[in-house]
Image 1 (cartoon, rainbow, N blue to C red):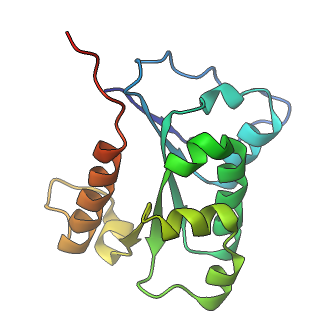
Image 2: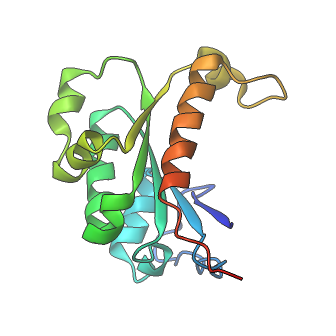
Image 3: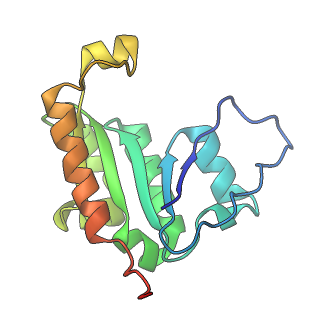
Length: 162
């Protein structure tokens, strides 16, 4: 299907608008949202919510910090109950969540965590320093990626018979 990644390359200019969303590739469209402050704030406070179509499969990528988890909760609330309930969260951070981060989780994030729709993506110093390269991913990251992919395949809309 079609994969859209919603991530701003640079902070928005005050008063400017987000670009229009990509044309839908059909029901098998997947939107990945990087919950950085500039993009999420722009999505929540402008008329550009058409980036977040009801019923669309969504992966929310966040870090395990208090500000990022709070921002993720705002975004999940903006998705609405139908989309939020089917969303997946890729949480980048340590094996053990800091207590302050755990305490800052809201009802939507807790619900997704309980439903097994939150995948922890481990921190890997090599990837953080160098980014993606042609080298194989570290085993822990590859395992988390397969777990996330399995959740997405399980939530794929049924294909129309031909």
